[in-house]
Image 1 (cartoon, helix red, strand yellow):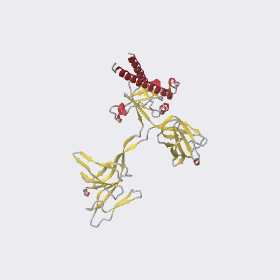
Image 2 (spheres, helix red, strand yellow):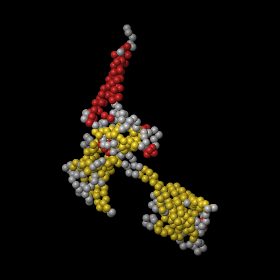
Image 3 (cartoon, rainbow, N blue to C red):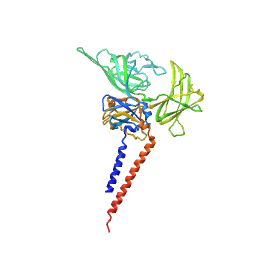
Length: 454
């Protein structure tokens, strides 16, 4: 009976330890209520940079969303990425008639004059033989720069009579080497006051600076008044960034400037405003984490603010690899004359982060950050939203902070977070070791009781 009682006590201790591991709002140093709008139960929250500055970990493993009952809600973190979209463009082609002797092969007796950039200046037929007449064989289209994948050709055309117009389409980038793009057909039919028209031709989506249209029956070749080529391409937008307020620098005896960040953060860009005109400064930006002695070079470049055509031109940003740093240092090449002042301000740019959470329970919901002992509690987005499709993001509700992060005195006045986390780990290991010893004693007791009595 004593052994059973001891087992129950140990079980209760283990259960208490497990319950104590569940995060509560009181475990976090900074909290702020949320306002939600739109259709739930999933909501999207764009995190301002103040939330990152209030966290204890740069990867936001110590972020949680709570409801009014203090329950932690399931959530997922989404890091901002460059947006991609399909952009459609049109090109008004320059058109040139292609004429040749009746009965000759396509392209015979043509003289093409181009500029040094490849733009067509003139297309003329060579002198015809006395017994042959010049006829319209087709048209040459100049598509511009030739870097747009073309998938549609629209022609403004006229013919002596209604009917079908069949033609071959060829493409080239140098007017010498041609490749086939297939065939196309135009149509215009009128009857009893009604009309059917076919003015568009589908193209395979290839790039080409020039296109050549050859009519199968030159005697029926249409007269073109215009040609519009169109296509689509992927357009990549900028990566969404969060920018901090300017941070004041500390100057050292060597003329370098340094900045200390609230915690180690994955900085991807820095911006250093130049206050004076006609400033040119070759620089080296280095970084390190807390406790490190050596500075590691992160970026080299030239900052400037100079006059240019149409106004002033500036370069005040440097791109970084994106590794976590807690300190930055800017060294100046003295030959450039410095930044034009005794100090410098720096803003850091961090890739934007979004929280998607599943709301349940009562409002108001609140965001909490600032726990050194918290572990990552985020779920993959496909787990949080079963059957997830990126298009579902646009119909989710929105959430935003209702005010600024509020430090909690009950947390900030307690023991340092690192020490608190260490004591929790020590206590857990002690309980686990006690359980192992207890199991050993149980096994020994069973072994003794099973021995035969003499």
